[in-house]
Image (cartoon, rainbow, N blue to C red; front, side, top):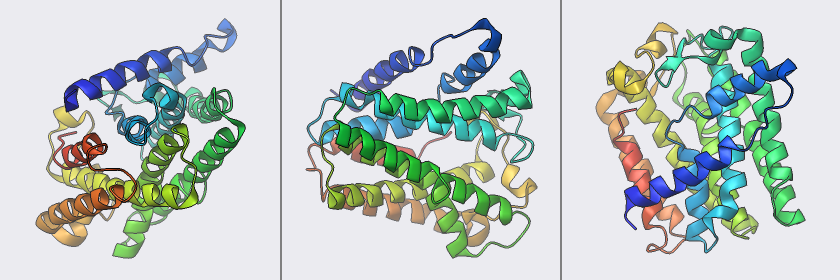
Length: 295
């Protein structure tokens, strides 16, 4: 199968799984279920899920075995976007071309929807049809990536350095945590779903995906400065309005684009330490396609 066919097949499987993952529950709290599904099922690139599913395939596993792991990562990602858009954070009114969660459901329900998605991610891992060791390892890895030493830590750095000149090393650390940690754990969970639980292998895959995550964030910075608001589905120039230092403000457009290319090349070399080039062909193509995306 070619790249587009594999992508569509994976995403179709994932969407069916996600649509059945959160039960309706009582009408008394239906608002929060609707708010959770509003963000979880709003589409997006599903990059993290694709890395999870395709690392599993590249290591000899079945993509279907990775679905609970991929879904859990997407739930954590959706929760983070809901909270990221809140007035107390980035105060964004648009997400993926639609009103942000809190603009539709109110701030309180949006906050609770994010909490609900985060909690349900771990329920999804805990109830996956996998071995006890794999399940516990998956919970540990996702908790670490989503917590204070991962994504949350990156968000704290982001908030703390608004309207300040951010040193390059701090900016890189922020992005490795805020963006890279969740992409890294997606790749690691794909390996776990395939039965690969060795520390060295997981560390290499984490390094691979963190490089991809940093490149992904630099592209985000480039698009925020030069992109098309219609294609992005959210306002451009928000980083400058919020007084945030970006790779563009530190290095300029040309050096930032070169950094994206170098990080992607290095990431693929790292991937090939644990995945044969033929088996990793889709993942390498995905990495390169993320460098020239428009949203």
